[in-house]
Length: 204
Image 1 (cartoon, rainbow, N blue to C red):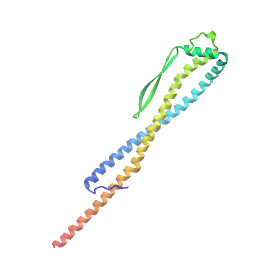
Image 2 (cartoon, rainbow, N blue to C red):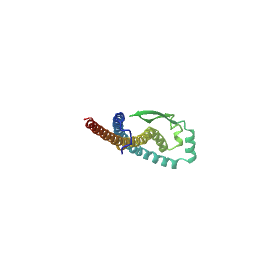
Image 3 (cartoon, rainbow, N blue to C red):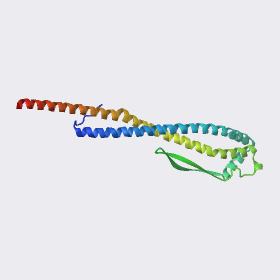
Image 4 (cartoon, helix red, strand yellow):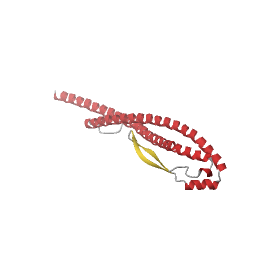
């Protein structure tokens, strides 16, 4: 739908510049959108693969914990968990993916999870703790991939909205307004020619 504007050559020139800028912005956003979608698909595939891998790795850990909980008293398990020197923390930094800031997680592990006397616990508990520590890196990576998917998906939705606004609203409006101004300028030019002809007839 064309907007009401002054039908002048100056306004026509201004609108031509604006539509060129809008089309250039549309192309840049479209290219960015395509790139982000490709990156999202790549990360989603990696997340699906790692998710299955972590799930398969956790099954024997939970099985070993279930067995060990039946062989070791709850009091002893609680004491071991409280006295464990093993600590884990996650550092967060940002990585730039096509102008989008994605959190990157860095796992930091300290201490040995098996720091108690082995004679006081079952072998299943020892194995479960050691295996779970090994899986922690993958768990943190999985969380990082999940966050990246959420951030990229949110950006894709936002950019898609802007691309659609340019493609289906702003650019068609500008084109319609330009056509309208050209028609009015043509009408004014024809009217001017007719007026000149009449003036010539009067002069003769």
